[in-house]
Image (tube, rainbow over all chains, first blue to last red; front, side, top):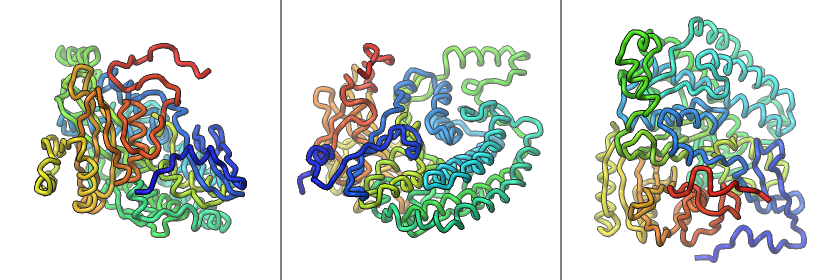
Length: 402
Length: 161
């Protein structure tokens, strides 16, 4: 075995031609507060050492002090571009422990919102990725589309960025009246916007020359580094948890998994762009499947009763009081539930000791793992390309630092 | 509930390879958990990766089982196969007075940051890790925040100066 060199040792003995610079934590292209220690030889990156933790708020500790239903609110603040995905991972882990079945309508609405949220998350990625590379105007067009989706989420849940819409055992409440019309309006306008983005970004030769053959990671390395989501599929590995370990009825929807083989920033860009069309297709299918029905599971000790029931039925009032005041006991056990969030595999490890509060909740954030592979991608590239590579990883520091 | 018969077959194959590798097997909620002795974890991971197709380490996380428990800590390895799409959980139990586990960074590179995080928040030392530093908390932070005896608000107001 070769002796391992500690990363810090390199910094202590800089060669004459090498220079260490600190990029961030307030650099706009680092998407939050990420600091990179770059060892440069001229403009070439010799070594990249990501430094994270600036947004660490001890969320995993906080989970242990909150009841299961209160934890949903914390998950919103992790990956703040994909809060509904976080909600889904968390509530599905709890539902797995409780072994609750979710009604059909709730499943369909969950899928619909997850895919809308995926589009919204990819809109932010596209806008900021293009902004990093120097295309200013894309940002505004993308955020306009994202705003429309956030308005839809707000209509259903009351919160733009922090919906907490998915609850253990179903949804917070049913869709509001007239939601279908608003969604139809968005669905009608969106394809034209996508055409615009394709012309504005994909067809842009400057963008292509900045992204092609940069940040290459081979399929074997990508798996070894634990890359998931579009970053993995950009390296030619056909893996999507919606197909591999289907949940929420994804196996019944008709969609494809985009895979690109060139392993570079451009491939990851193309995968995400094509994914948006697939998500759009899924939302269309959920619209057709939406049939009237309950959106909460029949588990009165876990699911909060409807407001109207509480006024009429004594037992609903008692259940409501008990859930809010004492919570519900979750059977002893441990689960790891993973979903395909917009950035990759979002896994929740949840351990219960039988009480109303979890013993341990761990989030496996896709951004955390994808960022750890940045040094492998950035070494040997130009410093300006590091910015493009970070953009292609689509990281959210709220989830990395937790 | 997911079918676990294939996973149990793999566990039997591992046991046939070396009976000391597996202390206990649990099959609950559609997930298979294998408790592995600390000294064999690298071997088990290596065989699981090279012979049974678990080529991705999806997650690695530690947990504090409680101050009174013995062994007090555990480290969970969530293995995933990109070919047959199955998950296997390996678990290593760690005593409080000797919180050390051999690193699996030689098996999967992705273990690097996961192990740093576990070291940072729970104080479990991963032996032979190439770069075992704190990752989320500052380097001069006192204590390990995810331990059950660490108060939610910390011991005293933490100051950066």
